[in-house]
Length: 471
Image: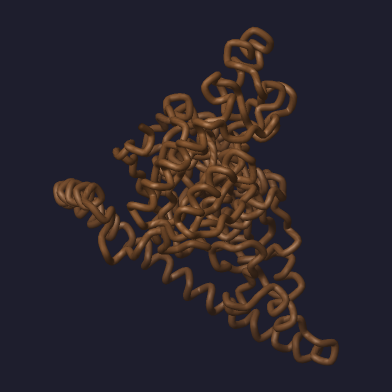
């Protein structure tokens, strides 16, 4: 009977945010990579992405041999403990995924083991490749997969470095080498065929000896692991009071001026300015990126001037980036002129396209398209009538734009002049709030919010109390 190793991982940039998974199926006896799979899954949580990775890995193994035994290894303690039956599954998004995973193979054919994240590089890399591809609006491709590179190089697949699309993961090549280097370094020349065969025989003999030693080491490590788990459980119980105290101190630090400990470095700080009023704003009409693209009204220009004066007093803005739409470019131009800065344009900051609802009030949409409106209010994946953009698609676009701007402006304070939905989405992602929170925020014209992004991947939201510029 064949035995497979399935290694799986999933991740979310925002939690929830743009998410993807990766999974690898390898032969337990030889270590050969047999199958890789990865997919960008849109906006989801880390745990949902991890379960999706597990499910994909099990299905890939089943397609290879439904009679095989499977040993699953993941760095998600939650998934491993729940699938092993030791922890209950309470979250409604994970229950159906866990049930599907449990049905891929008959009971008893699958075992589960937790492993440290550092040992799960292969699946982690695939998950990051899928998320990177999703940010580009492309499907994940196996064209530079570990399995194919391994075949080209004459070697089995190994763990590659985490992150980045198209990175090589062949075990015989250093992780810093690219895909081309992997193939060139390991593919034997025709004149070396006899030497390769002799080396192969010697390698087989060495493998037998290595397997015997590995079996002994595995037995020793299991005993050590059992003891370590026991000590870890005790340490966890002992550490809970200390953790509660540490959490309280951490909360106090985050709430204090400066936002974070000095050793984390200066964050990339985005000051989010909604554009000033247009003629459509006081009428509360849908005004996205697919409508008439109105300019500012007289009131809107006054609001932009007051925002500019307030930001000039604070003196912290180092760059200005605007949505390409007329109302944001006009607002940004007024502020940038006051600050003595140029305006950059980023298409990712544009407003959601509201399709056939553009220019209509909420009441008019409810009268003309009631079913579409109800679906839109119930699900972030629903699109406005006429092929508009869903909130899920907007979140994916904004997450990719955020990541790009954070990388370009590390340690700087940047004014982003944009719209209602992009600002609410950036705040929602920073807080880890669910999609329905978009309907629970109110954002006035020319209002300001601030999100700071730190080197450890965390974000902090500041809601400005100084509204004098709006009077």
